[in-house]
Length: 75
Ligand SMILES: [Zn+2]
Image (cartoon, rainbow, N blue to C red; front, top):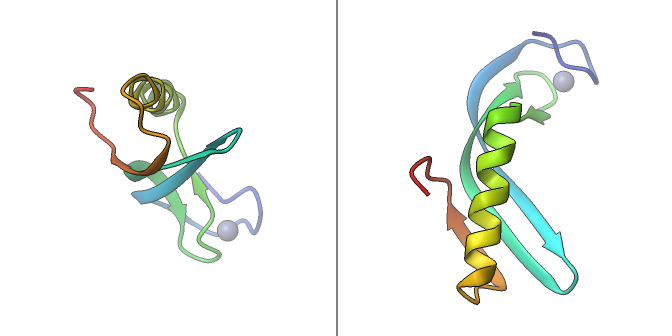
């Protein structure tokens, strides 16, 4: 896969993704993603986006409104 922005090479890597919901800001760390070796843009695959949404939703349910969460497939 090539980068949609700069056509650079995308490599498997990890990224941190911020989720803003109203006044809340959660950052999910170490999300598996394809990362551009040229401009650093990242692309998260659909299956991982779903997991991310579950992680963020369950953190909010636990009352976490601000901070970092570790990406975890088991969650
Ligand atoms: Zn790029």
